[in-house]
Image (cartoon, rainbow, N blue to C red; front, side):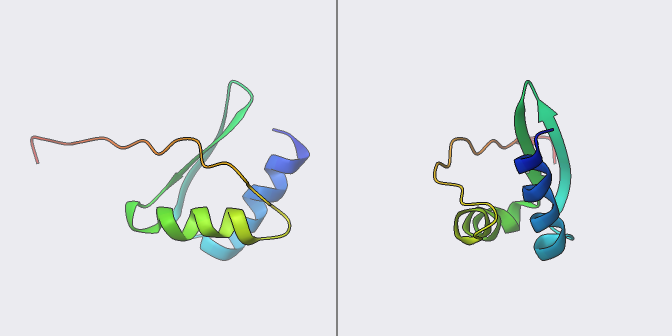
Length: 68
């Protein structure tokens, strides 16, 4: 995990700790898992927080549990 990824993780844990379900480094990319109700708030935080300054929202993945 890069220093930037570690900072991002710290910001998210401080601001959205209950919404953050998992943090992983997947093939050199930061992969975040958040509660489905929190993805918009999380994306806004990543964009607006001066420590993060995310400028590109690349992927939003979901899983359908059809048997539920």
